[in-house]
Length: 481
Image (cartoon, rainbow, N blue to C red):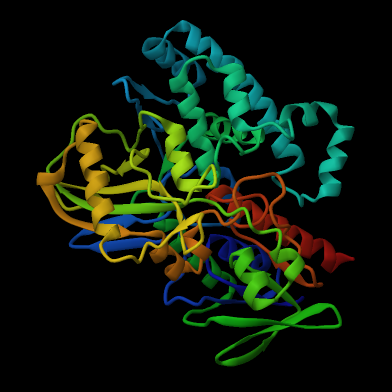
């Protein structure tokens, strides 16, 4: 079997290490940080425990064959509670008929019928994506091959945007807001994101949303335990500075400790970082200009209990497009923090994540990336983070959720902080913005494979885990040939 070096101990890197270790390879993981997990991070303070990355688990079945020892999954109902600017509230449900009843009660039977029609289209997109896209390598050639399966091509609708789909199927602007939000799951603007992203709400609502007692950070702990069982070595505080090649193949990696030889290198770093710093590849680098949005985060220790909140809550703005214009710097204007953004609030009732009589809130707002370009914001500018945190709390108060006099503490996490913590350029949450043609899982030299949210099939826990399976399957196929 082969000697494998995995660069990065995020979920993609750990999942690849588990699969390759289980296949009998000699696997060593190098992580630049002192802890593992990447964006699946946890922060603890004063008895509070926050998931600072993913907080909603979908498609849990993609983890089943990793052999993880996890606590029992808890289904969420509602999956998400949506608060609209006109005061209406809509709870999503993993039961399609229940969700239709809730839509009818909130928006009328016509809106429910519209969503039902969209749902059936989204089901076709999901099935086509699952069959032809999400579990295998995707290249221009493989997408062209979809034309031989005309039903899949018609469902995925290349060239059409998610916004186009919402305008075609949904007459109620509030349902359009709900659908638009799923583009941000991949860091994209719904006005430019492909219609194929309608597969995301289908997957979330068909397979359900789940919570793990203790928080989703327990997945990272379980993955490390599985690596230990398989004999996979994890080296922390080990920043890889170069991928070495010879004869058109990856032959090892270099760090401050010296050279580590390898037959196979699996990279879980952002593709932009890989092709800019570790294996300079100008042609690949030129294709990575469409970066995902970032996020501005508040971690709140809240005194008392808050009625009316679900586990996951979304507070929509009065005019959604203004938020996208601000965050993405549309119409040749500089990107700025949105003045009236969508606010996502996660509040777990799990007693393991907060002291008695308190609540732990994770608050997320879509934000421009960190940087000095027109499409970014300098989040290190003195006073900006504190001022925007106050603005977000004031907005929540105006939307009926005032906790300003109940705060035990407030901590902020800006895109600059994420960039520093996990080497995500600009703090882009999902690397490359959502699209059908993300960077491929095979690198430009033999023996190099890419996993993680910046490459195919995309960001989020399920997709990152699938990227590891795609890479591991390809390595297995190469090993047999």
